Length: 441
Image (cartoon, rainbow, N blue to C red; front, top):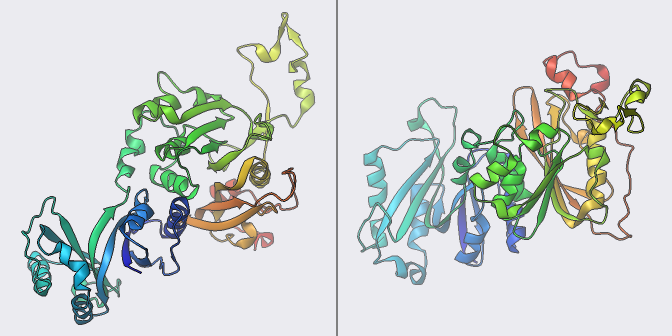
């Protein structure tokens, strides 16, 4: 079976394999990704043909491109030995077409003269076509990996591996710039990073014909990202100001900006704990970044002191009008703990996801606390991956669950005995993650 080199981005390394696994599932491809190494920017995979190679990375954000492998080695001599053995029947179609060489070096810089010497070392390939630096018929890439990254002089680093590949296809990594928040017309303080929103949508299997829901939509970062891949998006948020927008801009404005209005179902204002979506309404995926309670305390509708609001209940009239219909009415809110939110989110997903549907949700954690016990579980959901984005003393983790196939009538199986956050993340965040209590160890 032909081998191909996936050239990976040197960013968000723990997300790379889950994204490729999700894309392979979307395209119905069987590919072994066990060779992935988070420390290396290349991955060699077996695929049946070029078409499968294109399908695997055509919408990837964390892959840069894919190449047909012509040779590899731990030394230059080994590489040239392998290239010489590459079947002539496979290389013949590329002998007389225009071409160019790309020299891609990791952990080392190459001068122009060194690059030229490398290209000329492949003279035995007998490529008789013209060299064309712009829009050649074929591009050959020499990919060098060097170890000892802590050596100050790059020239002193040792060659770890070197590959020769024929370019097949690029990924969609270039769309990150298109969706950059700096260029977006409507954003807020909680708008999610465009690159990670797109990656989350890939891992969530957003695709044409699928319905994606974000119950904490904010300014619609995940909605837009999912719709870029053709999914129909619906969102909600307890903060009506973000849903309604400001001045002339709203989530709808962003959809118009990117030409995605055909994929926008709707958004509504609502408290997630009192969600109006009917239990029989099924979703293909839930992709969200639940509020952590950092910028403000996490709250839901209700009151710690119900008697305080007794005179504002809907049954009470003010000048003949129901109080909750008055334009100046502000519904009371009560504190809500993040661990309870995660419990409720998993319960909601168990009811509303289709069989094998995905829940992709972000969870913050202090680095000192992170471990298996911190990850919420549910009997109807299978945790398939955890992707970590590290900051200084804290991280946020993308938890990816799959809804297990239903063996009953699909009723909600509540699983409440899993209070994992003994101390609110918000408290630790503001005190700088110091003074950890013994109970947290």
